[in-house]
Amino acid sequence: MSHFKSLTLEWSEERLILIDQRKLPIEEKYVECRNHEDVYLAIREMIVRGAPAIGATAAFGYLLGARELANASDEVFFDHMTTVKRRLSDSRPTAVNLFWALERMENVLFSNRSLNRKELIDSLEGAALSIAKEDIEINKALGRNGATVVRDGDGILTHCNAGALATVDYGTALGVMRAAAEQGKRIKIYADETRPYLQGARLTAWELIKSGIDVTLICDNMAGWVMKKGFIDLVLVGADRIAANGDSANKIGTYSIAILAQRHGIPFYIVAPLSTVDLTTVSGEEIPIEERSHSEITHLGNQQIAPEGVKCFNPAFDVTPSSLITGIITEKGIARPPYDVSLREMFEKNPEEVI
Ligand code: MRU
Image (cartoon, rainbow, N blue to C red; front, side, top):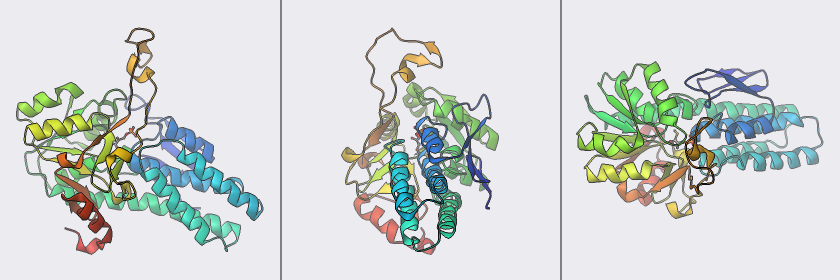
């Protein structure tokens, strides 16, 4: 029985243990998932969130699903696996890493269907562990690639949480910051609080303080002013799905920051693994955008702050058009416009050809 542990998730003795991101930074609590339904709920309820973290978690959910009917007949078992995949796919719609990871797990299932059931489940466990371990290596590679655009003394604005918590470990946008800091560059991070779910205030600020990286928390509506004051040299954000033409879906508010960055002549970079690039989605128009509960806007925690019955609109993500994006930092290098060419080229590169 294999054991794996990172900040975000732990696979141990046939269960998945997740740090409960809803409770951070006030409490460090953990939630145990023992079957695929627990994993579905953990993703849907945002116990775990962030595109690569959702993908890796879903892979373990698929594995748990296989263990549930380990002794069933082939017909019952393979039908069940189709149901498991469908259920996990329904947890959240925007981050493509979820679908990418489930597709990868299903391919392992079908390519090993001639094995006995124990060997088949072992191969699924190997695949889920590979997804988790690879994610950390990928983040370190994109961190190194991204650090080339960070200069000593830079002020960097980020939005939402694209850190260790949003991945298996290390982070994407925060991975670039970590790599730059590890190289001795003195950087100063400005973290948007990220209304309404406050991933910036709760998670990014917590992670950066823990890592000893200088962080200043601002409200979302201060981003333009800190740019105008000259505090920001660079914007680094993550992504949930990048279309073939480079249009990038990320946390609601990212689009406004990209416009502000263009107005102030500040480079705006997306930082994401290639598993976030969806070449089957032609442009941002086709990216499904999750809408979340109105209570996230009308309430702060349990405290109501808006009049009873007010109409609300709560999209969880927006799409930044590729024309506003300076570069897309991936594990295989930095894609530059035109993205319909450069993103495809990234997939064809060998890791050693990087940069
Ligand atoms: O709703 P969330 O918290 O899952 O949204 C997360 C984001 O938008 C992140 O920026 C994105 O997933 C990239 S994480 C490396």
